Length: 355
Ligand code: NAD
Ligand code: DAU
Image (cartoon, rainbow, N blue to C red; front, side, top):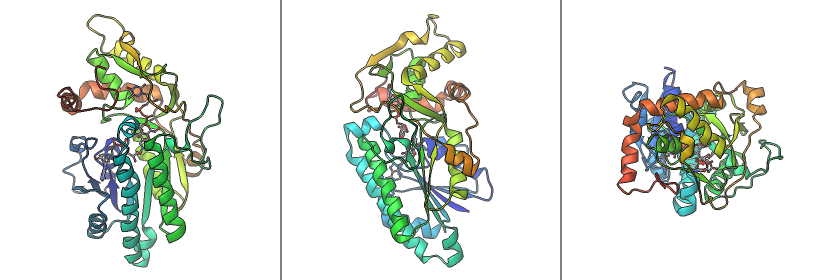
């Protein structure tokens, strides 16, 4: 199986590449533009493997995508490349439109032409897996039911609107042109190699540096959390066994308010690496201006993937978070250069370290 992973130098893409190369029957071609969010260091442990190859490229370049598909005789595309940070989409939406919408369109065009050129058996095996988010469904209040696959789309940020648009394009290419696609929509991931502009790694690293822990608004917004390796396993399962043309929700069944997430990180760190002053890390919590248009709650009904494909998360939020914190404590070689770039003045999103 020759698998093209787009965005494989990012957080989830790198976890997926690490997962896929463990099967010697897979050849993984990781195509990534290496934006600020892409980091070759996340692939250090697999970069020398014979069944792994990195290609620097832009999904917006249809001709380059066509070349890679043909040269590597791709059987499956797992499309993760995207702009992903909601705060950045508020400050500057244009790259979100370019990459998430136009880029997905160009990749679909290249994929369709390639798929049509394949001999029958290879065409039958071919699949385009589009990786998306729970945010396309909009937000929920406390007593609403969780999102189901049939929930109408109601995205509210420039990021989620661009992801919703890309999901619609993928469905249209299936419906109109017959391209064999599957779509997954997943909730908030956390785990190792997570870029520290996102809540979990930002809070861990700010705490370790005894800097303020920014909580937007009053901290009551709720997200569902999934350990990234559980997501990688679900993606492989859907790409392999999912029904063509269908979408699958993926989630951790772990809804937490943002304040609860931050406090749990503080409590684990109080145990693992107490502050020099012996005060609790909770004292560093700082309530800051809310994110404009901040969605109140996301929650996923994952009964379809559980029932049809037998998937369930292996990590609870507590075990996954503890492992994640251990990883950040042991791997400053990975995150310190990113933090140092920030201290030299490079932006790290709205929630800048030390805000
Ligand atoms: P990330 O920001 O960590 O990584 C994105 C990767 O895409 C980076 O390596 C970047 O260099 C690459 N990229 C960006 N533009 C590109 C382009 N034009 N061409 C090629 N590569 C490009 O993202 P992530 O958090 O790993 O998310 C991966 C995918 O999963 C995204 O599609 C995202 O919408 C989706 N998703 C993420 C989460 C989450 O919690 N992080 C949850 C559900 C779905
Ligand atoms: O739900 C899936 C989505 O999860 C993915 O599609 C996105 O790509 C990914 O970035 C993530 O989006 P969120 O906006 O939920 O993640 P973020 O880590 O930015 O924020 C999580 C919550 O924490 C959100 O309610 C905003 C809040 N927050 C965030 C930061 C960075 C804070 O309170 N303080 C912060 O400093």
